[in-house]
Image (cartoon, rainbow, N blue to C red; front, side, top):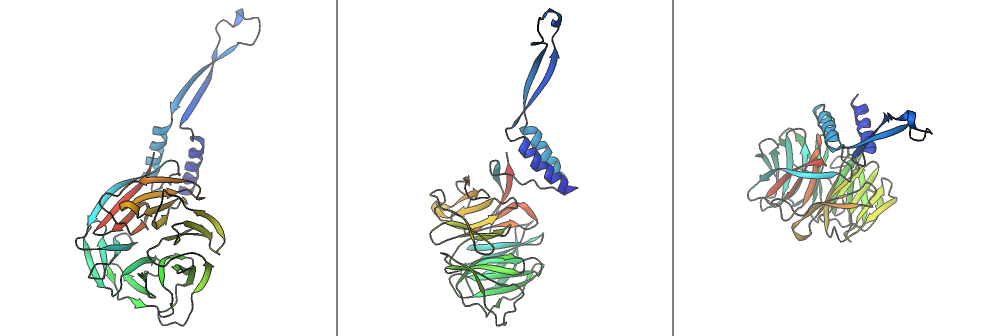
Amino acid sequence: MKNHIKNSLSEIDTVTEHDTSLDIKFAKNEILEQLETAENTLIFDKSEHDLGDQVKDIRKCCKALGIIYQPKFKDIKVELIQVFHIEGSDLSCGVCVGDDYIILGNRSTKNILQVLDKKTGRVINTVKFSENTCRMCYDNDQNLIFISSYQKRKLYKVEIAGALVKDPELLLFNSDYVGASCKYGEHIYIVVNDAIKRFVLTATPQESVEMTQVVSTNTFCGTNGMTIIRKTIIFTTKLNEIKCITIDGEDIYCFKDEAIKTPICMSALPSGLILVVDRDNNGSLHVLSEDGTKHKTLLDKFDTITGPRDIWLDNNNHETFYIAGGEYLEMYRITCD
């Protein structure tokens, strides 16, 4: 039933694309008997109505039923919901785990992983981590987080049990400098210098395996972005491009524009739209269309963050996302006109 309603929402979007409806009805001509021809036997009564409020009401009803409307490129907006201040931190990355927690990488002198309670905004647990965290990837099926170290040949795996974070384990099979990573199917895809590689996510820390190269490309393993959706990989390059390839490595598009000078991280929405954070000039938020041909700026600046590092979706609510940088974590909601 919910899938049927979702499909109906897409049809409504198509029908109401021009934002107004035109009602036309026939009115009887009262002097019909005086006409010599049938040319003017009927006249039209015409009226126009703005559909914006009606469509918004439909979306509200769907939300009450637990059906999340995915906005189109033309109407997507974002609004700030909450700001979390973690004094003394230097937040570099994060992931949502389950309904209640966020795991944060803290690059401060403490070098720790922090567990944040979503509801209270309080840090409820910390784990010592000997490296500068670069990027995290969460495997929901096995409750694992894969962590890459900033500009080092070190990749870790961490087990999660509720708010408990176990000690990180170094994956000895990795020999590359590693950056952003994403889960797709049974593999973890990861950015390394000049390539995208992958490995089986069930590989144990001591296992003697090698990462398989997906494609050779102009990537840099420092602070970068990657996301995967609908069998496509979207990632940033050392030339500040945003590239899209198939899961097998075939080129789809390459976006480069002065509107996004230093893309540092990204996240794909279920609709196929790509949220991109630009680190230039204290940071801004942008969106790319599904085919990478259109761009729109959503935020010229963030509320408190002046050095954004990472963006990620709430894994149980795809209309909410987080942006981290410095001492602050900002929570946003995706909306539409």
